[in-house]
Length: 437
Image 1 (spheres, rainbow, N blue to C red):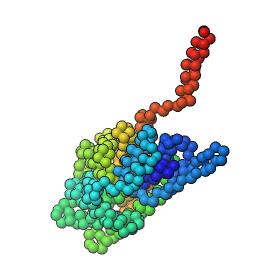
Image 2: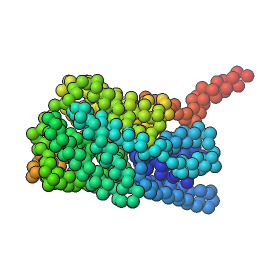
Image 3: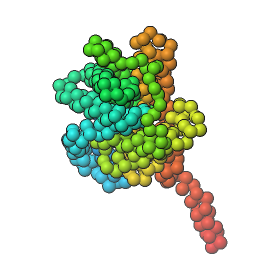
Image 4: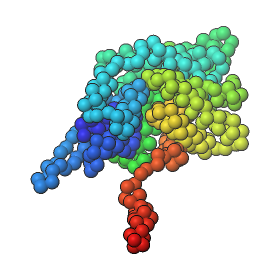
């Protein structure tokens, strides 16, 4: 039970839904012969209960608390391998405890330079997806590098995550104001709202907004409510930081133009190029979460599948945005589930990375801008559109993974059913032979 609880702790800490974590905990317990275990996950607390003994029944409880939420896909992949090994009967409990100790004490796979480079590449291609040209893509990469670099510096001092988001929102706004003023001085034109939206998507990728809705869709309402409130608090910090950045830019003489007056045409309208950009953004996010090379490649393929459907199939047909995003997330969940099971990769990695290019950063900025300018109806409509987009992403991913499980589900051996079939056939034949004798 302690081994299963420790495995569940690592799963919950790396954005696995509560329903999937409970199933994995049951799998580990059943593999070691403990079939009747009650498992409960409430926010960050994992509780296991069972009763041992025949004449004197003794209850046994194991409680584990998830102390830190950090997306480290390297640890997630190691735990996934351990679960598969335990399920196959190749790892005894003593060896499993030793492997878990090594996983808990293992350092990050690579240094912060590579991690920050991944965030920069992600910001570079997210800016392209939002319609930016090469100059804005470069500024998008620099903005992402600046945001996450300051976040790593602040995390060393134990500053709460809310203030990380406030500072991140401020840093997403000020480079946009500087870039807008600089481009005007050299005779170029960039869209600062798209640059701010790039920074917001980088910040939203580290929040649990989509993960909280995944918990809600899979039936874990208490955990979904807690994660959703946490995500809303983080989003509120981002909005506050953006508001401070807009005010400071006005004070220093670099005001941002109104959102409604900015051009919305994309600099790169080629569907194949935007598909490649979405896939590269997803792969870069997988690198940011310390994923292994195979997981990064599969994240690229999964996101490319969803982006191809969005940019080359549904958008030319005139499909609505929510419908197109739902279909793309379904494709991400289905393709990621099938490919992940084929190459022994945890589906959480491909799912979270695959939906990253579709996060509604621009809608959140437009909603916040409208609320700041006393346009309450327009602001609430944009924010509700952002929440609806996240819900479409979560619902599509869950349904796609459900389809993947049905397509590649392992063949289960049910002893009782096999015994009944043997009784109807084999035992009747034996009786007939005896009667003839």
